[in-house]
Length: 151
Image (cartoon, rainbow, N blue to C red; front, side):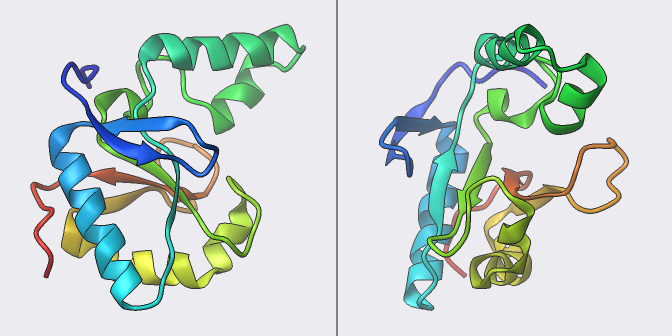
């Protein structure tokens, strides 16, 4: 998967950082967020585009902290193998649970995403027992279809 070259701003994430996505993902994310809000569901954007270099920095920090590479790769992909660098992946959260935790999988927001995200082109990348061997990440969704139109 190639690193995105053209990105658009999608506003601040839940941590106050400016977030960017590839244009088609930005359109789909905006439509999905509006669709959720119409149904009383508040999706929090936790992260969007992350460069391959940025992913390498995350892995390096964990290695420097003494974590074994095998353990790191169960929760953080090797640089160039994570969907965030494509500009089409988003991490989402809920105002009712800790960010980046499996607890998100038990929220109203996750239930809504499980039912409605495919209508906007988004797919849960790392369900339980995924073939990549990545831990269950209920917060990580990626745009796989050209979408973005509100159903």
